[in-house]
Image 1 (cartoon, one colour):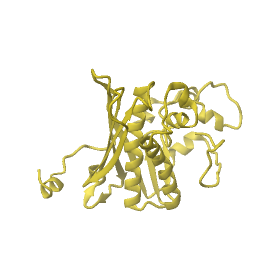
Image 2 (cartoon, helix red, strand yellow; image 1 turned 90 degrees about the vertical axis):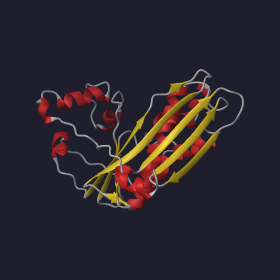
Image 3 (tube, one colour; image 1 turned 180 degrees about the vertical axis):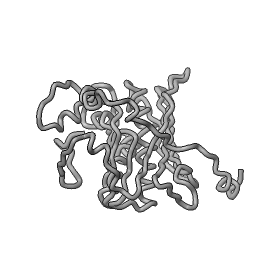
Length: 263
């Protein structure tokens, strides 16, 4: 998302530069690093024309942290997004928390969405669970200047925001008039405000390298058409064993918590 038009920065912009491989080899300046990831189903279609998508979000940390004597990954926020072309009923949006779990239940009707249903429903499911869960954890853990929150995805759902500023009308998508969708998309802005208030840093991982966000930040124009080509040029010729991966977390069943509250 670019800072233009109605988009403004919460804090003054700062610019620094250094060789990218040097930056990648530096140790982290943060005492605590938290990572948020979400997992969703593909949009599921039913014979009556309705569509359903679910997403759950989880946070892990390094070093490992606990909340209410439970590991952070025991806390989840789920979102169930549905859409229907049926004339009966109306839009619904409800959020509630019970114990470790927060749950979004949102239904969108044809009055607000007639095209790009899969894209919009999945995008809203991801946004609902991930932005809300990040805010839940950041607020309860009292993050500060020594903390870093990493989001597995963009900080803002740019495609959905563009529907709000006028692009949606061309595709028969009216999210502006849907209170539930507005509340969901507002969550990303509230997360940014909370991070600024706490003084904590947070970043998003852009997993769609077919953009020009990195290239647009370069002072000199290069021979690359998109960020993917630029990233490939940076790592060209490096031994493959210099890059690696790690698991986010191991799923466990928390019997101590369950036994104290029934089966």
